[in-house]
Image 1 (spheres, rainbow, N blue to C red):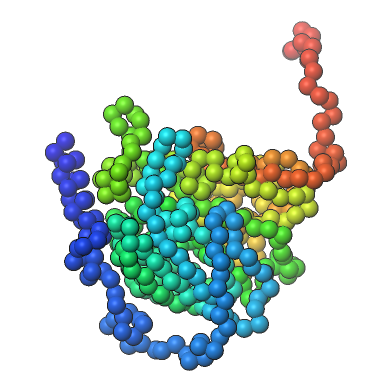
Image 2: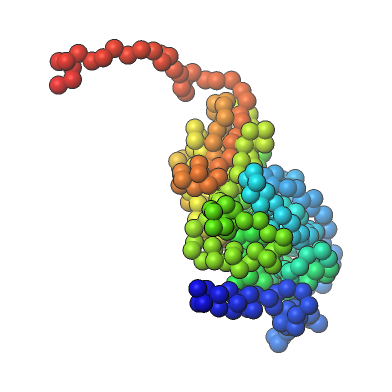
Length: 389
């Protein structure tokens, strides 16, 4: 008992530096006079950047993605993106609450879509009402811990960073303020995805161009919610109050919830994804902390980029595929039958019991050639004794 109490005290002491009003927090914040990391010689960005066209990307809440085209632009652009950080309480399932750290008020954060060679210019705002220091690490970017070192912001501050999208693919981004705060922020929803479309577009193994009619973004989350002595989930008045209990559950590596979006059933029923027979749908699927095994019940992965590199030749005709921890994958499927499909993590315990599933409602005509009930259910006579041998 003493050891547990001591561990809590040490943990809280180590983490408290990331709350506002501490000198340690100020030490972690970089104010760069050159734009680059202090202590290094800096090669300035070419002056031609100033002449590039600028476009503002309107971000939308998941599972939707911003408007975009698969056709690359004639020249690179500066894609302006604005995101705010909000610490808020969310309801993970009826009567079960968690303090979430969010980008733009949603779990996961919004999908960003640019093209290879574009510059991403992000303005990141930490709302004044928040308690914590935050930043952002783009797995798609190069240098400074994915921009994490250059984007630490206190509540009430904003920072602007620009980076060049040189690697095509679909990637995770997440908050990474340092030390034990990193996993705590990530498993409290502070993650999202960015897609860098390849210059040459999407192609199959024969070089045929691929396209999709619509796209969705599934941000899978694993939550670790503490329970009281009666086994009921606890509710807290602030992130600081929940922190030590959260860490004890996290360290056991057993999630209480694994969900698509911010709560169980977020993309089911009235909120199910939609499609039509004949439409090709791309599903981007991120998991910032654990592995996942997506499967579309009643369909397949016609084309799958398991590791997210969209310039690679995709695998074809997969029944189930794998998303590595800390990555985003993509799968494309053309729907051939109407009905309600289930897209899930095929660890079925995680899907059915913990919440890692979504529904896709597909409209259109049924094709008996693909599937037909030849006989409806009816009474079946008991086999004769001779038949049982």
